[in-house]
Image (cartoon, rainbow, N blue to C red; front, side, top):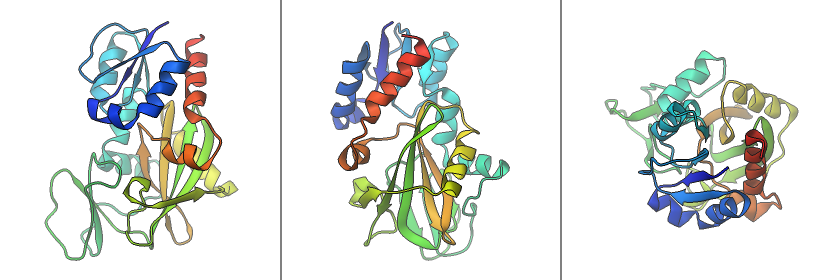
Length: 241
């Protein structure tokens, strides 16, 4: 079986290492987000659920499915979904100050602001109460229902702890309660390979975001886990290759 690996042109330039891993391990060719040709399976690394929907409508297996991409890339819908399913979040539609203002479809800490005075809600943004421990968060990587790794990100200079913004990273050991929370969230989702981000509030992990096209730089820089190869092995198992 031959598949396609879909990246935007911009992201393909940033992710050559991962792309080469995929190509080495699987029979895939790299295409951009405009490709609508034939494929036996699709690895969608664009955050665009409409691409997944298109191929799913043709009966083609897509990693990750469109249902995951929809919820992961709309923060407002994601927070509402988690709250409805009993997952603790920091309050949204928050009118107090300070407040965190996040672009609904933003990634990597871009278009995230700390407001020190109230403003009218702007379309396309989530307004959220800040946690009590700024500049620290935990990312957990999962493949096919299994936790693979967890890493603590921290910043001494910014309330955002993103690695790509200069935050520091170190391995993090999840407690039994942490793992139970991760799996409770994961069980609500239909996914293949994701990251789940948590912030700290009142001394415990609180859900923050789902990463659909989750990156792997921290994994490779801090551990000996070859997570892209593990993902490729999972894809082979799913396709019975």
